[in-house]
Length: 287
DNA sequence: AATTATGTTGCGGT
DNA sequence: AACCGCAACATAAT
Image 1 (cartoon, protein in one colour):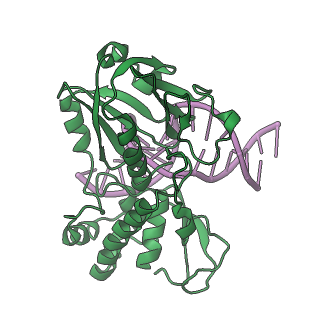
Image 2 (cartoon, chains in turn purple, red, yellow):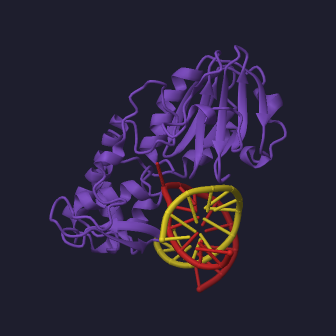
Image 3 (spheres, rainbow, N blue to C red):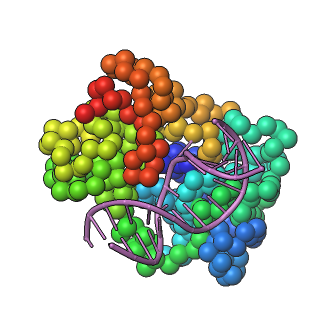
């Protein structure tokens, strides 16, 4: 479910909950989620979390006393983290969780990280695409290398983006979804960035003008930065109890808006299929 | 009730 | 290498 802004929201809220906590034990409810690693319990016992890094949509947990053990967490479509405090109170999951739902572990709980102070971090993942798995420093380096630059980065090179995307023969949508080209955009934010840049998703990338490509680079970064500022688009992620989990869905211009009038030009928003994904755009003002 | 869609990505094929 | 379609899986909507 999550794209870069949602993962960043989860990371920010999670890190201050678990940094400094020491793992006492790990429960594996579904082996696939830990890549069938039978050593994970032994290797994590006694480890203290020092921080969480992120590249694209991938989170990387660090530990205080080792530089050769990391935990990689990817939410894919339906992954969620929940933190249960010393009072047994569930922190996370979003507004859709009712009080009676808040019993952990539950049906879709895949792993649990129990800390020595009695708190627990749960990983839930209905569709089992996500993971929480161990990695060595070498593996982390390899994983990082798979990602292109993030449009939200302060040093994101717009000129490089313009020249590179204009060499690609695929649809603009497919190019923007390619994490090895630019990291972080997913199905929602690609559609939103394309609307902002007034470019149709199915346009061949090599037909973009330099101006259009530059607009697209800016739109991609802007839309993700604005979403991070309000805590992402979904309820389906870790949120602070009582926290004001803002919702970027209020600001979406095309995603899920098929059949309604484009805010910019009044044309009815269309939904089609491009790059194998549900794709929303305005046939009036997106060229 | 069967088909289709789902905010992701990795694989195997051209 | 770039690109495409499909598979991984569970559930909700049509």
